[in-house]
Image (cartoon, rainbow, N blue to C red; front, side, top):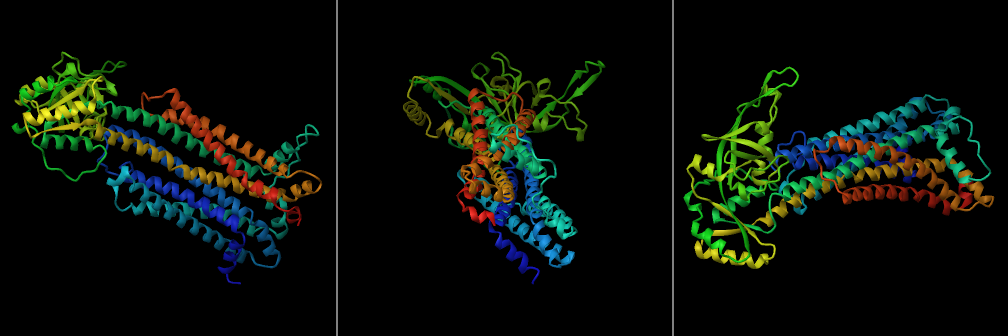
Length: 626
């Protein structure tokens, strides 16, 4: 018989088992590949050089996503090894039959090695195609249209080769072991079903038949049972980290971005300045090609005092906040600290330089939410709040450059001839977090730009926002036809939606892994049914009800699931607390939402595992007595 035709015909004969193995392998490959491709597209991959979001948010996301990628890959590897082990171990009886017919060891190993290769190639290929398709669909969604482009095919090759090798290595071992066995040993039920030779469980009473059947099946298949519990534990660790971490981190990071603007605030600026300000805020969620340098100090952008006075006279306006936006070269100013143990003087920071958007503000009208430190004092002229991208690029330790200590809150930032003490660090979407807020009076003194080029207007809560904005627009057009009104909420909603979409996508992609785990448990229960089918058929023939099959397998499934769930969720919570950012936002609703997701995953997997039980309960008794 042809060495390729026999394995192919054998796989087609076992359609359910073959399709189950191929699907599980494909889901594992697809989940890993789609997550890697997505992270690479949004600039969160190891080799990515993204220019969206802020460095602080990117660092939070990168840390979280890297850990999730490792977990997804680890779960995929465990699933693949379990599937290869389960598939090839249960072929030992077939190997024994072939050897008993006189087939030499080498030919037996060749047949089943070909069968393993066919399954691995089919599963990995289907997984790669599915992963690329998912990445294509995600990248074409409304929130990610800017990241369209060809996927990183090196990641495709890496994932395919890795899972191919894992499945091949762990699938070869049972084949080689079985090919060296004697036909009698290979045909033994203890070997075929993976049963232990220990004494059977002694019943505690005459009742509890379902419990005794379930318990005996689990303890007799110790190796496979321990493997599936370990697999489910790792899967629920991943699920807990992804669900809990994503929800908590999403709520925390979204609150940072939402705090950067008020929904009832508009800005007034020259048309060109207004377009530039929109671009500065849109950089957070949209990729832009290299933009020409903008001259913020152009006198055409000055807003006259008369226009500001008109704003004060408009009904419904509660506050006016004139600001000055410039782009300047800034420098880090180092400091010193005392080691509390040795009392030695240690340098803090260095003298790094760079360009940044500078926003001059009135401290008495400013309330900036900072993730570190505080906002600028109302009467201060020499304090500054910096964006997190500035903090990460210019005020963070860099051992490769000999900077072991750096802390923006004990350092100052230099702008032209002036210096400002840094009192806070904030996540700010403006210019991807490369922004510095300083008092407008001192900024005007050191730059000789004595006018404002943008004015923020807050509409009173009691006033109708649309009507008031229309009145502001009409008055500004009369004062200067070149003035434009910017609705802050529009781009803010876009930035918040983009950030939420990233967290949602990260949370959804590992569902492939959950599906793989559910199918692995189904495969395990199918193997258990194969062992117990004559036993169940006999019980049914003697008057036992069909529900005995369902309840027994449901009991086995629940024991395995709850064991994996308890271990996985406990360890997952610990891991989540370790990798979360500092000061996360957690509420009662957040905890309830996390619990609902985890409980839904548990119930969903349990329901899927009942399919083979119902299938056998409805099948004819004689079919399983043969």
